[in-house]
Structure formats: C-alpha cells, structure tokens
Figure 1 (cartoon, rainbow over the protein chains, first blue to last red):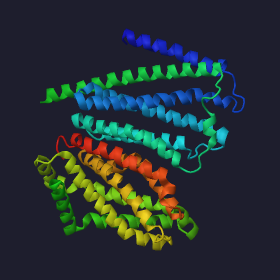
Figure 2: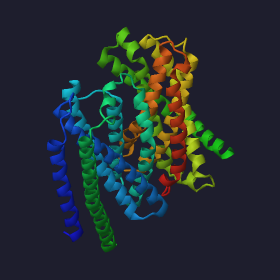
Figure 3: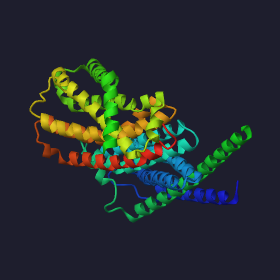
Figure 4: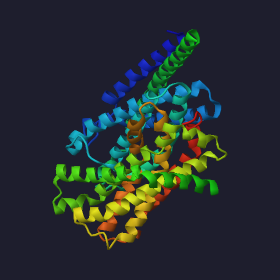
Length: 222
Length: 224
C-alpha cells in the first residue's frame, strides 16, 4: 500500500465515522417520517454521486475517442462499475424507505422508474464491455458511454410522463431543511464523494495493470 | 444523396428477393401477440386497457428482430467491408441502412395494425391518421438508434443477445412517449393532447439520431 492510499483510506474512515455519528445521533428525527427518514442521508448522496459517476463515464468516453489514450477508457470502465454499484444502492435504500412509508417495496414512481432505466443502461454498458476486447472494446464502450449519458435527461423527462405520479416525492427534499439536517446531508455527501473517488482510483489502477499484463502476454507470445 | 439512394435500393432489392427479414418480423409480432393473449388472457376490458402498450411491445420486439439482421448479410459474405471501402461517407451508410430498417418496420405495421385491431377488438379507424404520425415518429428513432446498436452488436462477441439488452433501455423514453401518445389517441383524444409526448419523441429522434450518425464511424473503424 502506498502512502497516498493510506492517507485517503484514513481520511475516508474518519469521514465515515463522522457521518454515521451525524446521521444517527446528531441530526434530529424528522417529525412526520420518523427514524426511517435518516436513510435519505445515504440515499440522496448516493444518488448525486452516481450521476457524477455516469458523467465521468461520458467524459472518459469522449476523451478516449479524441485522444485514443487507454487511461480514459479505463477511467470510464472504473467509473461505470462504481456508478452501477452506487445507483444499485440508491434503488435498494429507496426501497427500504418506501416499504414503511408507502407500504410497498416498489412503485412505478417517475424517479424510481428513471433510476431503474438508468441502471439497466449502465448494466448493458458493462455487458458490452465484457463482450469485446482491446481497442474494439474501448471504442464500442465509448460509443455506448456517450449515447447513454445523452439519453439520461430524456429518461428522466419521459418518466414524468408516466401515469400515477405520487406527490410524496416532492416533500422529500429541499424546502425548510433544518440546519442540523443540512449539515448532516452535506457531510454524508462529501463522504460518498470520497468513497467514490477512493474506489474508482483503486479500480482504475487495477484496470490499467490488467491492460499492461495483457500487453506483456501478447508481446511474449508473439 | 444518390449514394444514399443506391445503398437503400440495394437493401430493398435484396429483401424483395428473399423477404427473409419481413417475414421474420411479422412472425415475431404474431408470436408475441399470441403469447400475450395466452398468458395474460385478453378479455375485451383487459385488451382495451393494454392495447397501447402491447402495440409498442410488438413493434419493439419485431423491430429488434429485423434490425438485428441489418449487418448479417454484410458479415457473411464480407460485403460490409466492400461498402466501407467504397467512397461513401459513414453517415450515409448508416442513414441508408436506417432508412431500409424504417421501411421494414412500417411495412410490418401496415400488415399488423389491421390484425391487431381485429384480434384485440379495438377500433383504429377513427384515430388512424394521428396513430400513423406517432408510429412513424417512433419508428424513425427506433430505426436510427437500432441500426447503430446493430452495428455494435455485430462486431461484439454477444452478437444477437447484445442488441435487445442494450437497445431497449436506451429507447425506453421513446417507448414511454409513444405508449402515452397512443393511449391518448385511442382514448379518442386529439393529437395535440399528447403534445408533451410528441415533443419528447421529436427530441429523442433529433438528439439520439444525430448522436448515432456521428458515432457510427467509430463503431465500424475496424470494419464490420
């Protein structure tokens, strides 16, 4: 383990403990939803960070097509994996919240539907990556990485057209958030950002190492 | 333009000789329709309720069968690389392929719509013109994006399996808009009642269509 790694992991551990303390002990209990509302500190920050992750996939894809450098492709790959993980957790934490609040694990609410479609798009991205090698893999993935992000606003817009929009969704954020709640939210957002950064960094390094090994093997066999 | 036309006519002529794609697409629509009526049990009330959605499920599945075959012939005989080496720019190649796919989708719909109306007992005659507008707008987006994805699928290892799993999530906004507009129209509403859906459809066709045209070159860089 390099020194910078130790530094990042130390920083992450402190942030995680701090945000756990803030989420469960510091932030006041929400009047209407009660204890279950605390899951929003994870849910909403995960959701923000998964958008960031998919935006990084887009940037990596674009840069790869422009420069042809392996780094950008591996960055997109790493960010997509972590994005799918985070977005999956958004769906799971959303379900855990929906069960006591709406009485069901799942409804076809616009936000949930859009999140699910986004998850399917990026799972397909990973399936495509698994289905090709080398430069071809990188190029096909870059195309899908770009098309997928261009599609995200349309997905969210179209989900709003679905019937049965539940008004509950609009009470969940913003408006009159108590200072202690806002502080807690911001700290958990930063924690998730650092978690995303640390995980993507490790995954990126792994991807670059794997590519280097593949190149070495090809050279040796040739 | 003339190059576009030549490529388009080539595909149309090949298809007229074999009629392979068209028959596969029609059969797929029929099979799914029968499958749905057996598994869900289409009594008249259910049929009317799910007709707009079912119409687009049939269209999506049958299109993915047809679009999936887009580059098959090119691959089998190596003709695709011949087309790529000829002095035609990539956008024209994609546009011509998408145009022929669009034609297949519309022909299949022309056959399937009457059958659909009879089997589901829905009256399409009153709303035929607005319905055609929605079907054409939806099919344009499906054909362009689908053709790009077919090219990607044909050079990836998963081949046929990749097309639906990658294409359907991407065209979900298009399908949601089409189903919404179709529901409004079949419910007796005028086309401008579905203006939000139509705007979304237009946005999808333009944005994703442009992206597909621009990105096709990248997909076929190493040949087909």
